[in-house]
Structures are given as C-alpha cells and as structure tokens.
Image 1: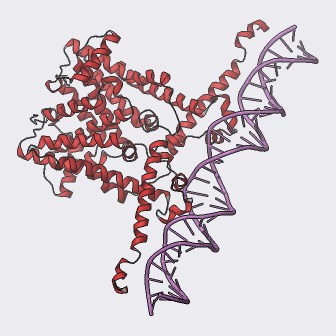
Image 2 (image 1 turned 180 degrees about the vertical axis):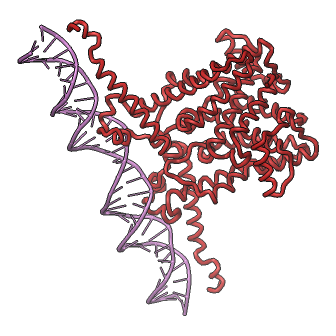
Image 3 (image 1 turned 30 degrees about the vertical axis):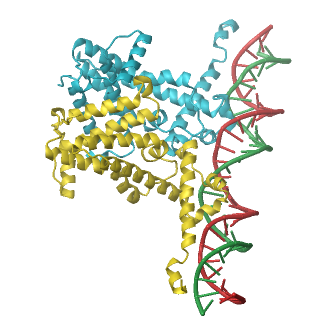
Length: 241
Length: 241
DNA sequence: TGTACATCAGTGAACGCGCGTTCACTGATGTAC
DNA sequence: TGTACATCAGTGAACGCGCGTTCACTGATGTAC
C-alpha cells in the first residue's frame, strides 16, 4: 500500500461513480422513453429524476445525440446477445433447434424490450442523426448467427431450398454476386434470400404484435408465432420434433 | 335568384373555404411530419406556414389530437382505397392476379407515403391517445379485400392450404371458432392463419425496407418483393403466369 | 337599393410550461511530498 | 501526519427557443327586410 502502488488505481473510485452515473442515465432514459415514446427523451427530465441539474449530464454525454447513440448501440448489442445466447443454450445437435431458438429469442426480446426495439427498428427520433459508422456494424450483428446457421444447415443437407425460391431474380443475383466476391464467400443466392425472407417474416409478426394489429385477428400471438415459425422451418426441409 | 332561392346556399362559400383550410392544414401537417417525424407535428408550425396565428387552427380542429386522428383516418382510408383500386384494376379472372395486385399496392403505398405509413403502423405519438372506436374499424379496412379474395380463391380451388399450415394450434383455433360464431362465417382456420402470415410477410419486408435494413442484404428491394410475393402465392397453390 | 344586424375566421396578448446548451463557479475529494 | 495543490462532478443562472391552449376582440362578409 505504498504511494507507488496506489498510482495505478488513481481516480478509480471516481471512475466507478462515473460508470454508475452513465448507466443510471441510460436506465432512466430507457424508462422515460417507455412512458413518453422514443421521441420524448429529454436530458432535463432525466436530470430531474436523478436529482441533479441538467448540465450535470454533460459530464457523461457531450450531447443528447450521444446518449441516444449509446442507447441504440446497447439495444443492438442486447438483441444480438440474446439471440446468440439462445442459440448457444441449445444442446441438440440439429440446426433447426438452434434456428427456432434464435427466432423465438428475437420475438421474446422485442416483447420484453419494446422501447429498445422501437429505437432500433421504429420511427427515427426527430432531429437525431445516427452516426452510421457506429450503428451500421451493430445493426448487422443480430443476424450473423442465423446466417451462419443457415449456411451450416445447408451444407449438412438439413436445409433444402424450396422450389418457389430457386429462381432468384437478376438484380438481386448480381447484387449478391458482387457481395460474395467482396467478402470472399460462397453460397447459393437463394440461401441469402431465405434469410431475408425469414427475417421479414419474424419482423412483420413482431411489429404487428407490438402495434396491436395481430391479436384481433388470431388471438394468441405467442402460439401463432410458434406455428408460423414451425411452418417456415418445415418448408425449409427441417425436420421438426 | 330571389332571396328565398339563395337560402339553401347560405354560407356555402364560407364552408368551402373552411374545407379548403381543413385540407390545407392536413396537407401541411403531413409535410411537416415528413420532415420532423410523426412526433414533430405542431399546431404553431402549421399556423406559421399557413401565415395565420396558431389559435386560427382551432376553428378547424378542436385539439391537436383531433388533427392527428383525422390524419390517421385519412391514412387508413387512403391505403385501403389504394389496395382496393389495385384489385379492381385487374381484368384477369384469376384470383392470384388480384392477390398480387393488392400486396404490391400495399408496398407501393407505403413507399410513396412513408409518413402516413409510420403514422398508422409505426411508433405511437407521445401523448396522443387514439379514439379506438374511430380508428379500429378503419384499421381493419385495408385487409378486408384480401380476406375476401382468399375466401373466394379457396372456394374455387385456386388456393390450397400448404401442409405446413394445416395443424392450427389450439388457442388460435378456439379464438377463431369464437370469432366465426360471432360473425356467422365459415372457413378453415388455416385460411385466416395464412392471411395473418401473408400480412406479416409483406409488412415485415416493407418495414425493413423503410428503415433501411433490407437494401444492404439483397440490393433491389422492389425486385425482391416481387420474388418473395410470387414465392408465397406459389406456395398457396396459385398458378403464376 | 339601403340599412341594421348576425356570423364567424382570424387576431394578438397572455398563461404556464419545457427544452438543449453555455458558462463561470464551488466545494468535496483525492494526490503529492 | 500535515499541508498545499489539483481534479472534476455538480451548481445555478442565463440564453433563446418552441409549445398547446384560452380569451376577449375585430372587422370583413353575408343576410334580412
């Protein structure tokens, strides 16, 4: 416990307070967005709830936009982590079990975190401009796992491309050709199309459920989602149960 | 042109000005939402642009919320009309042509009117509470046409329920049983499920396109949409071209 | 045709509110010797 | 251990702004006879 030994821990206690504070700010921001909508986020309201004056927030985020960016980054990361954890938690060797775990994790996360979901997939916040160099790579994360799963399942012969998807149209095909060249990857175009299609299907169901357009039509949205996902997986040639 | 004859036209010119004004207010509101987001709607900003003071707006809408409700009603109606018009414009006798016309009209309207689409299917506006007795029936309109088409095509044998959709799960089935009893309708449960599934598919694609999550994956979203819709129709047993 | 009256869209001031951001500052805490 | 100093989270006042809504009013227009 000499002076020298203390040096590396210089400011440590303060920094922990700072992290605490930065986290608290985000937590309160999230709660307030849940009440006021994503566009209702306000530094002053956050400060009020933290029992602190508004300028104090500037010690942790240089502008309101930086706070929003941090919230978006957290949301993409949390969604991706939830999906990955769901896949990793599957002990079965069959790809289909991992695929279904991932798509169910997507819905579950959206239902449990509707505001974060709106933040990343809903209306943009007026006046906020996303720094794409930061958000774009994060936006890709959630679906990388599913993409790899599709590839693996296809190679193993567990996934078969349905005949209605075989004829990939020309512009999409040439876009994918370019993309594959740039990323030095090989796979059937239709496989990427199936990923896009699958994403749209889960996204559409979740969106309609979150905006209360689904319940009136089919009643039990959770059960319907399972049914719909099973139908999708079955059509891809996966053997269910 | 006696005094008596003029009586029925009493105030007519004024009323026309009023209608003009109410329409102008909505038009400007829509344009401003396009620039500021749906949450950025503001009576004062609209008044400013109309070269009028803010209280003048109150002669046409009693509250800001009433204006928003009017915009939402217009949006649902316009979407439903666009879809119906697309179906009516098809001369072919085959149901599939009408189905494809409707689903393409959905996307086309959303792309051409992204703000109105956000207004009805995106994040709610902070503080605004929709009067459900007004909006709920309007929200159903867009898909009534497609529903009837599905029914008709099924009865004609043009639409066949794919085997992955045959086993409708229990809660959904009992919900639909109740719904059919209340509305005195008869149809296979799976047909309603296919409508829900189809809606989610087009909605998901359109949503991901509008939020710029689709282009990076498949390039040409319009072409992909056609491909995806054809795949869906084909899977329903419809003969394409 | 002329005159008194009614209508009512729009005004301008005011209400009380909230917002993001800047600035010079304070005062508790930790550091160095 | 004691003292002088540095750090820096948080303050409080101010800036200039915009908001929805109310109110008593004005003044152009149309109506009635």
